[in-house]
Length: 366
Image 1 (tube, one colour):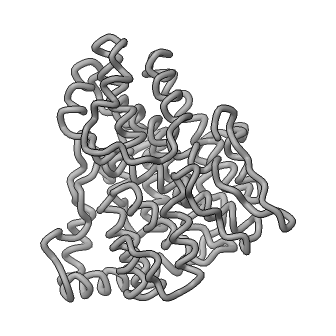
Image 2 (cartoon, one colour; image 1 turned 90 degrees about the horizontal axis):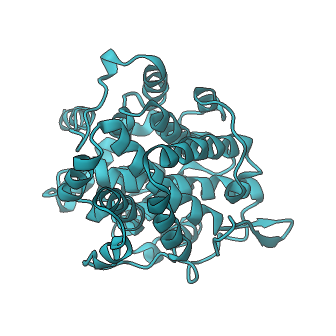
Image 3 (cartoon, rainbow, N blue to C red; image 1 turned 45 degrees about the vertical axis):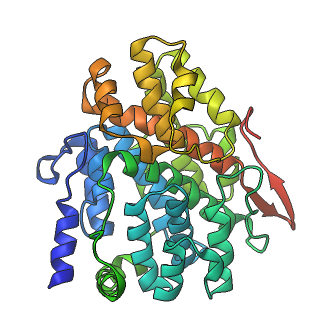
């Protein structure tokens, strides 16, 4: 009973900053995405709702998440959930830590799930999950991050890099648009464990369901695979998702942001190696000092979303809206910034091929 009420509250969770399209009144592309999400997740989950003011961004989000994480591929779901939870820890996204550690309760057991959620991946008992989690936790750090486990074949590597890339996109968006916690923050100890156990059982069917690759790709037109997604070559469905998402967000950046703003963000991300920016946002203001008021507002939202999304507060969004009102533009600019960061992190990963590491990278990305 308690678990059912919590699950219902998740469906109704208020999305911040934008007004989502209600499932019962959705039409066109939004309705088509909602139908797939509800079919595979049993409900239209809050991350889908928060994207709904932009049908294109909604479809891009869904395929980014579905094709690497949800599809039944060559990597077991427990490993993918561990990678997802580790990214959520790294990006300081409590909502996503809760969600994916709940999934790990069902797929891997509560001990390793709790260690990972507490940022203690090194204490996990399962050596395979421990190695994957430690790699995913540090994937944004370059240099200094651990390499992808060499025992993974190219197909497995593509699925895990795809999962990490998608989660680096999603956690940034969740930090901006959803409330901070999936579970009540005051719930601690054994009560919290019981809640996670119950939610894990509730999700059992969706976590263990078999899903064929490529279903989401029909939602957006075909697009060329960008050079920085060459790591996905072993998985046509993941490569297709990355290509379509890149086309959507590249177009969004060009539609809403001036070349000056995009140049500032690109240059900073090309040189960013995953370091924590600290409490102060002075670094952001320094980078934007030469821009006009509208560009500063847009650049501030984009830079903070890309590098320190947990610091995107109401005042950042309000200042952006002063110059660029509307829900669609807010979702698409945040989506562009999130994807720009995520695609670079994905491009920096090394996937073993024929027994040797080889690295693919986007020009300008080390």
